[in-house]
Length: 281
Image (cartoon, rainbow, N blue to C red; front, side, top):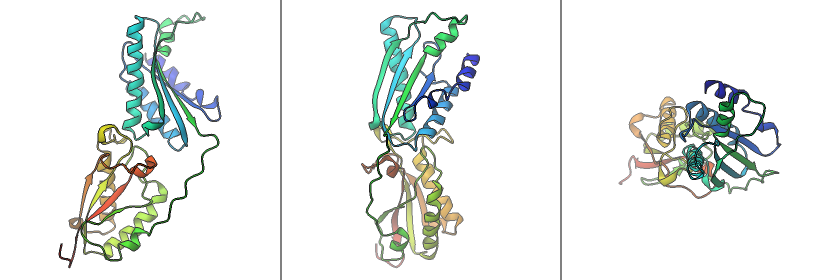
């Protein structure tokens, strides 16, 4: 099986160049299994990193088995394999609404080719095929109405119970790491919060796209606490910039409060004001 995975790694980008728009990735499984092997899981995460910046129209996920076993068994196994891949997409903050097909196709017949290693052929048939179709050409981005900047709002009159989204503080999909363009905005907010030392607040982290309001998996730690680690990232950053830790708390909100728009805006952090010095609350 190690030789098979080595072959897969060496050919993992074959499908990438076949079409200028369509992206195809295959995930391979052990015999009679639908749990994704660690090597294949890492390859899939790499693929997700490569496609997450695309404007995707739809994703299709098709499961397959080798030629052994009954038709009914193979259909069930292939469906379970497809479902396992969809779950990984969801856990890693991919919008399930663009996954239009998750189907088990059953067995792939053994082709009669000049190959002495039949097990290798069968190993390549135990797979899930992922087809990613981006919009071509990409859609134009919607014009978002410009809102007052948070740094200016924080300088004004605020009260306990006010909640503010950290606009333009966007995270890399599946990580608690900020996108580079967000760091300048966070630095400006930190300066204001150092000056406004009368504000006490809770930092609330959110994630996108998971089922049943669950938290997403942090790809770095492999733990299902991504909303918490996003909130803590902001907490640690503000503390490093001089905001007193006694004024701050952080909490993960999982996916309890989706905004209903583009998934990237659910990968967000909000500030809930809990106390403002000198006010009767």
